[in-house]
Image 1: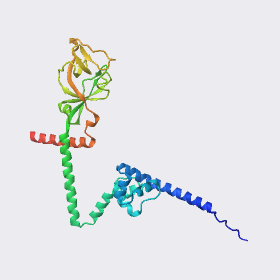
Image 2: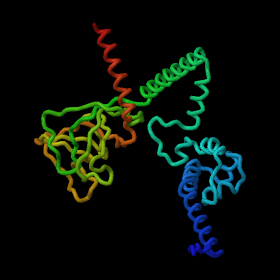
Image 3: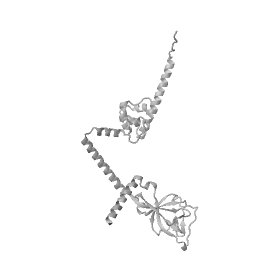
Image 4: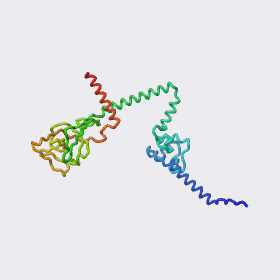
Length: 294
């Protein structure tokens, strides 16, 4: 007699169905819901707002994000467009160099549908726009930045830093401001004697002068050592109370080399691309200047 296969009970069927549904919910949530929610929040959209853009009911987006469903295939183009990503990104493929967004895919499709003559017109328009953008960027860089000498001499906010005889300098570009336009040089601070006004590593904007008024902060040189200190009639003062007043006699040959105008913040420097463009502009100006001289 052949063995009989036991039929699953109604309870087992219900349990299996519930387990399968739970797995499906979890899969949908991990594969679609969490990604849709993250992209929606990044775009600053509420669930109803996203639903309106895609053309679905308000609770549809809520169900997608909770894993109770997933968008139909015909909804993927408007959904990816509303979220500003490509369909492959929407499905979880990480954005890669060369991957097209939805708008880029649409533009490429439209471009391929054009005649050869119309494509040439589009190419010319794009080239002209890029040239205009490049020219505007160069003009903005030239207008917004000032070229400044940055010395490798360190002005000590401490016990003094030996300057030496062979000071070298390079040139950087700083975003235009009142102090940047007045400055002749950038010098870095080393030490903590001028805290809390200036800190170790600060880049100081310095105006060249051999005289400053009492209460002003300047760059001073004595016996080959450089200092950043506040000048007072009784000596050079630190802002950190742990440091005493520096007093010098007439024989010490202390001289002032500049007035400190303030700190050049890191975000005031030109970015890598801006620096590159500005250096090209400066080199071109030097070439033209030499050409006129000859």
